[in-house]
Image 1 (cartoon, one colour):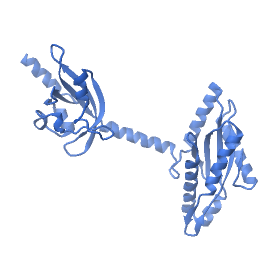
Image 2 (tube, helix red, strand yellow):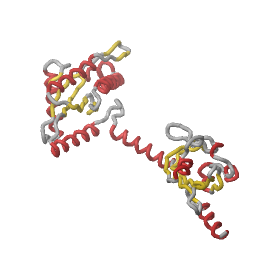
Image 3 (spheres, one colour):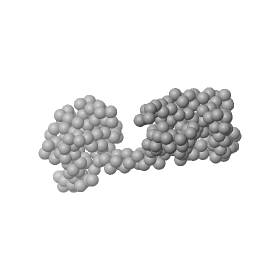
Image 4 (cartoon, one colour):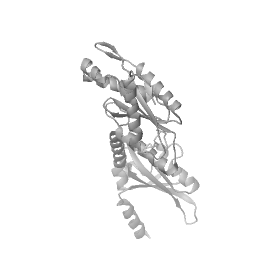
Amino acid sequence: MERFRNFYEDVLQNLYDGVYIMDRDRRITFWNRSAERITGYSASETVGRACSENILMHVDERGCQLCLGHCPAAKAMEDGREREARIYLHHKNGFRLPVMVRVSPIRSGQGDVVGAVEVFSDNSVLETSMKRLKELETQAFSDALTELPNRRYAEMVLQTRQDQSERYGLTGFGVLFADVDRFKRVNDDYGHDVGDGVLRMVAGALKYGVRDGDVACRWGGEEFVILVGAENREMLAGIGERLRAMVECSSLDTEKGVLRVTASFGGALQRPGENFTDIVKRADSLMYASKENGRNRVTV
């Protein structure tokens, strides 16, 4: 029997994951070498100590302490069910380390819960990878200057709407195409740095002027596309008029004084089965109609 116990202990010691065992009083009775490697705490520092002493100070994503309350191990011993959780432990060097924890109750020969075994793995590489993936995703679909969604994102949403229209006959969707009026003159008179500031200002006016569910995107240069849920021309025109007014009321402080700009809008409603490039072309064409009719207006 002693030989088998030594064998199982050797197996636990050589696992890549951290493993520790606690008794019913939540006192640590075993701590393997990977637990030492991951946490920085040796077996001599942990074995014999109780969770209530809070050596690892487990917290969840909201920063709530777990060891002093109902941690996954305590819950597993209460109801006899396995638990899995993503938590943060306190490394000996002071920082918080993300780990994935899996807890199983330990039962006696009579079936009574007499303790729990917790297996945990360093989740920091995954955390870093997921964060980097999110950053790359943001870069792929975000315009660096204005921080609005970019043309690629707009085209992706438009393609989705086209597919939904073809498959389900969905309508109630519109596109507003906006262009900053006389933007070349801004660059010529104030310089490109101010021009960039104007684009950020207009982007902000559109971003915070749209309704929930609508989205403003930078199409390119001084052009913007707003993807709108709209049932009819009147609704689309009303949304465009509000955004036009938001741009007109915005202003930018420059060395030459306060600068204001306007924008011309064109709007088109989706037609059943219409290719998304066609609705953008129609909205673009109507934006030019606004330019020809005096600028700073909405044509749908």
